[in-house]
Image 1 (spheres, rainbow, N blue to C red):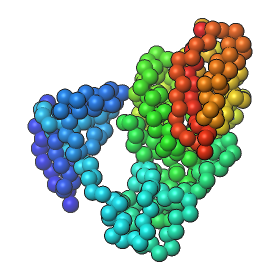
Image 2 (cartoon, rainbow, N blue to C red; image 1 turned 90 degrees about the vertical axis):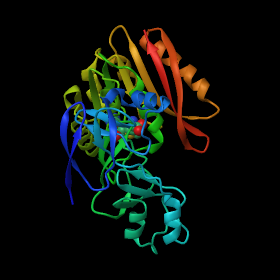
Image 3 (cartoon, rainbow, N blue to C red; image 1 turned 180 degrees about the horizontal axis):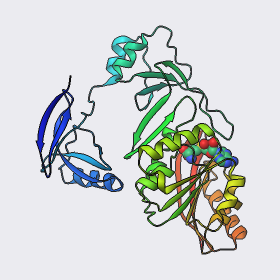
Image 4 (tube, helix red, strand yellow; image 1 turned 180 degrees about the vertical axis):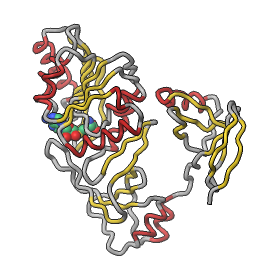
Length: 344
Ligand SMILES: C[S@@+](CC[C@H](N)C(=O)[O-])C[C@H]1O[C@@H](n2cnc3c(N)ncnc32)[C@H](O)[C@@H]1O
């Protein structure tokens, strides 16, 4: 049942309120500033930490304890889902992943005795899936198996960006969350970026939404990922600043010579096949490369040095290591790392 209420703020406005949706004062800011604003409000003890920030037109509304504008927000769940699962399952899993309203349990989880409807309810989701090994091929296709619910499409919100994708078709690496945040925090205003392995927009969307990139050229070979990227671009209102280059980047990057301030090489275990084209995509004055690689934990520094040398020789430019980021453990002793290089 829906009811109406009148909220008086900076503007007089009428809000449609769902029962039990709490109302709070709201601080409205541009999407690209939302993460910083959230931290600032938290530090100043102005945040209403019981409620979730939400989209507000093209902006983001953050719940705060004082102000002129009032809006409805969703409450942050404070119940412990582990206790709820223990109440209905004998040996409940200790870990799971949540993408939008889908919960994903790890490969081999025995669900034969589960009342899936009850499990979904206790975790406040609509769909349940089992994760299987990601296809090791270059498209890194998902092998996720949906065991409860209608279809695999999810909207996953992270760092004020919304990703929309069919989780049964394309992989979403939750472990790369810190890298997605890091890329979103780089100020890329006025930059032209080539995202050579863009997937569903892990980095393309944060660059456009938060870094305010002028334009991203997104290269991708998997049609399912391209469909998802198109939806994500539309959902976040940034389609006009992105061109999708469909197909093998060995070919598509050749049409992007000399235009980029920055190139993202986000493929593991290695993006080496695209290194030469990445150099050629940079503007004649140079630019920045973000090179992903799986490296043995004892060889990370050595690999970074040798890679910087390789790029110096191949490009004929002066190469500086800006940063070396360890993203996550990929397998025992193998780390997913990202090397940021400046070529000038
Ligand atoms: C590992 S996924 C992207 C993951 C994302 N960058 C991340 O780190 O979370 C790599 C993407 O590159 C795409 N890809 C692989 N080889 C490609 C090629 N030769 N040309 C264009 N896209 C390619 C795959 O389809 C996949 O979507």
